[in-house]
Length: 347
Image 1: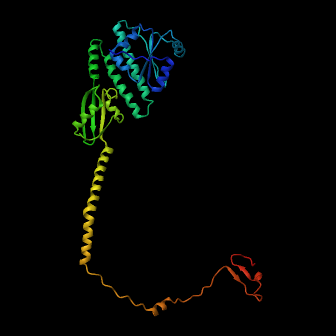
Image 2 (image 1 turned 60 degrees about the vertical axis):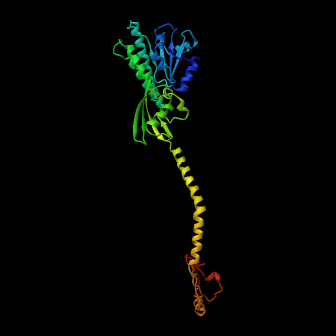
Image 3 (image 1 turned 180 degrees about the horizontal axis):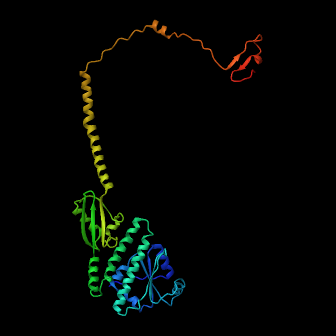
C-alpha cells in the first residue's frame, strides 16, 4: 500500500518550492496522533495528494517553524490543516467540527472538507493562469479531485466503501477519444492508466488504417518521442482526454521530395542518353533535305537622294531673355543701356 509523500525540507524551503511550482501547499499541524493524521491513510486521499500540483508538509507545534507560522496566522488551532497558494488570494483551514461524535462521521467530514478545499483552491489558481498549455494539467487534476470527492459526498455513510471501490476501479482506466481529421472519424476507446503512449499509437494506427504513416498526437500539447515511453497517467491523460491525430506533413513532404528528385534524376539520364542524340540526328537529317536559302542581291542605294535628305536647312534662333538693351546714342554705355524686365528699376 502506497503512502503519502511528505516534503522533507523546512517550512521556508517548502514555501519557496510552492512559489516556484505554483502548486498548493498543504500544511498539517499536529503531533501525528489525532483524527487528522488518520485521513492521510485513506487510499483516495493518497492518490489525490500525491501529485506534482500538491506539496504536503508536516509542521510540529513545538518547532521554530510553527512559531513563525503562528505569528502570521492568528489563532492557529492544533490539530488543523492549512492550504495555501502563492498569490495568497485564498487560505483554506480545515478543523474538526465539535457537533460530530461518531468517529466514522468525523473522518468522512474531514476528508470531504479536505477535497473541497483542494478543489476550491485549484480553481483559484486556474483563474491566474493565462497560458492554455499550462492550464491543461490543472484542469485534469481538478477533474480527478471532483471524481474523488463524489466518494465522500455520498448521501449516506452506508456503502461508502463500495462507492470508493467503484471509483477506484473506474480510475484504473482512461477513456481516450481520438479525432482523426484526415479520415473525418472519431474513435473512443478505454485503456489502462498504466498503458504506454506508444501502445496507444499502435492502436490508432491500425484502427484508422494509418499503418506506415508518421503521425502526430496532440492533446494539451504535442507529444514528443520521449513521451511515447510514458504512461497515460504520467502524461495527464486520465481519466479521460481527447487526442488529435494528425499526419506528419514534414515527413510526408520529405517522401514526396525524394520521389521528385528521383524522377528528376531519371529524366536527366534519359534526356542525355536518348533525347539529346535523337534531336541531334533529326536536325542533321533535316538540314540535308531542306533546300538552301536564296541569296538576295544587295540593294542599290540612291546616293543622290541620300545626300539630298541629309541636307538640313539651318534655322536661325533668336534667344529671348528678360534682359534688353536700350538703344541710345551712346550704345557702348552698358550702365545706361541695361534693363531688367523683372524689376521696376533701370540699372
